[in-house]
Length: 83
Image (cartoon, rainbow, N blue to C red; front, side, top):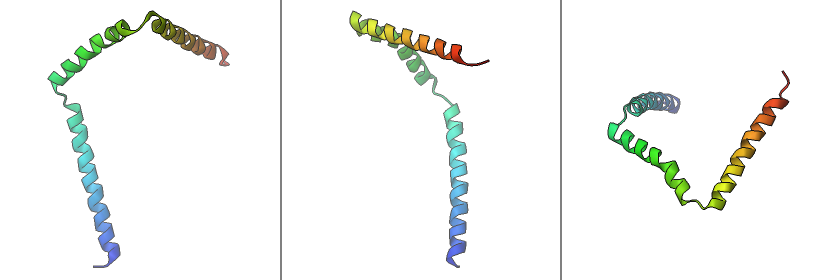
């Protein structure tokens, strides 16, 4: 067997293997563990409140100013678009 045939077979095998792997991984990604989903949701529900309660008033004020600037920058950007 020459080297070119061997390389071709290896490439074909690798492509087949990767296709099977990707199909299997996408199937597994769709199937979620309900207990893990519940834990993630629980953390997400209390995450923002817990984070804000640890901030000082000065830090909260800085975050609020940053948010306002971002909203106004988006508004101004939308107003400058030609129709």
